[in-house]
Image (tube, rainbow, N blue to C red; front, side, top):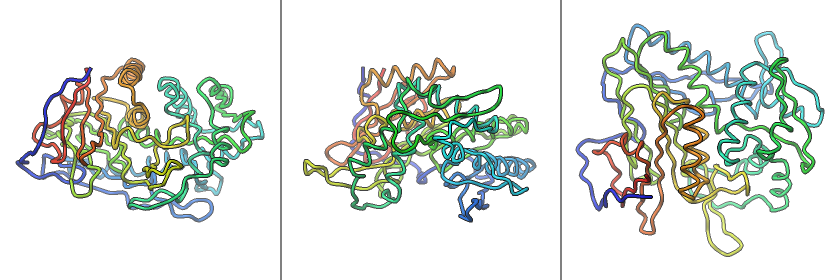
Length: 400
């Protein structure tokens, strides 16, 4: 049930807030990864295809922490990439997600790094917990949209119904996932089996999971330094850690507005060790006209059951204290496709029980008057900063 908290007609902000983050300390040290990776074909790739930012307070350890982060980002990126292949220092091909996908049709077990065993097993688990709203085999469908999405208003066409139908035939259901993607932990192999309805090939795509997974893995390595820091992967997956060597460890993280003229929708307080994941439809999208003559926004968060995006919400944010950032990345994508309150709560509860965390969520729903309604559960409402609410927020609803 939703409880109406407030109707906001206008709000005087006492202080300003940036488009993404406001740090409560002026002493923080910020570093960005400037390295580029070169694929096997010579293509230049950005780390995780995004902007990687690291912020810390402690001058003595910030360089050490950043070097660890930079090295591990590269290692993990090359393993989880489903679009490019890479060579190691000896000139040998690194076996990654793309290499696994290329094996489809051979029935050949592919020997992989234990990291990929863990990633694939976790992805399977979350497919089941999410009732299939998260699907790790959407690669063939996602590829149909290559080059269509932009970060500015543009008109484009959907993939043809024939192409989409064929690609959807290669999307593996929850019931089939263990049969089609066989993981042998003892021998550290993955076998991608044929799917009867697939005329193309089954393609694993884990972009909705791996940024957060990598952030959490690096967090585990950095904890021993006992300093406070923020890992920010493209502003969509953010992790903060509290270290006892620092007295300042509180971050105000602004949830980006869907409107360019509004700097943020609301701000969440991350006072210690937290993970936050945000998904929105305003960075990768296009407009298209349907057969019924209406114009709709298509964006990159696809519903695995249809191959199209949903427009229930304009943005979804998920937060948890001491949470697995990869789990939250998946959940922010999942909730985009879930309109039912009952089903949303069921899925969140299932993730909370499976990973022993308390999850807060916030949804941005556009109203008819170009303002927005914020929908939160009580956990997110407690973290939301009461002094920083977007000026276009019409009302806030709390789901109990």
